[in-house]
Image (tube, rainbow, N blue to C red; front, side):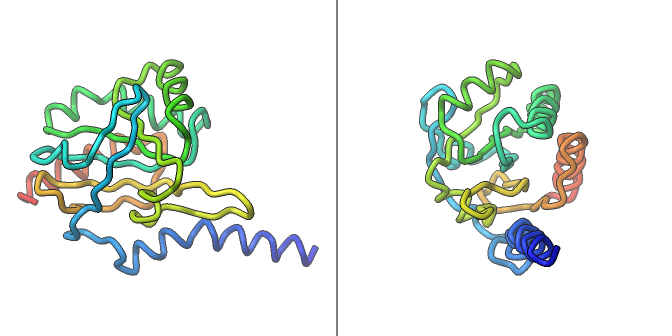
Length: 179
């Protein structure tokens, strides 16, 4: 029983650490968003700088085909017209490869870009990389990046089923406040 509690404590600590670090200011609202270039599900390279002048919803999610991840992605897809109205693009990132992303997009009917961060370098720069025992994953977090390339908001308390609606509400607030 004691070993079980210790293991549970370690796992919970590992899950909470990226959120704690983000809260400690490693990357915060007003910071320049770290640049990156990654391959998308169609094999093309996508760079953050490609979207300068637009709002970017950069969401990190743990895996392709997971139940909550699928719900989250489907809702982003459902709301694509609203993102276009807000001059925003949605980009998803996790550690899975291009082929996995392609299969996930095909299965779920996704048209926005999913990016393969197979070595974890981008996830590390954004503070979402988590080591769970012997495997690495990313924490579910979203960064709203303004047209100026700066982080406008960080959403770390993500509820997958309502996340797209939460992001749209945050974008509306930011745009109304002139951020």
